[in-house]
Image (cartoon, rainbow, N blue to C red; front, side, top):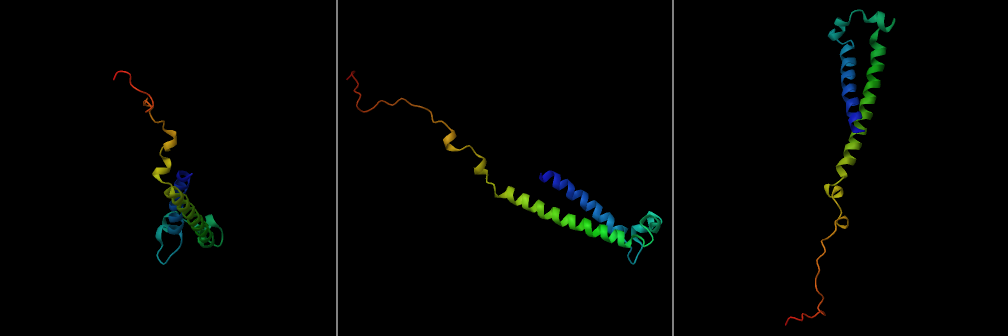
Length: 107
């Protein structure tokens, strides 16, 4: 489960970075390389679409980060001792020991 969430985290980071870099700023940024943004995103331009997308991706990123932290925290609470074989599962070797009541007839 954590591997799926970790892959989703990497994808969210890439998408969030792209969404932030495509937004207008005081300098043009990467928006200059994408051509005419207004025709693609509608009459209002990319501002509201990219702002909503950035907020949504940021929200998913935070939720995924908290979920990953929870799962890694649960995994950390497990001890190595918990995964070891329990002493009741190991059979002790049997040794034939004569009882003290038995007498040795060779003496």
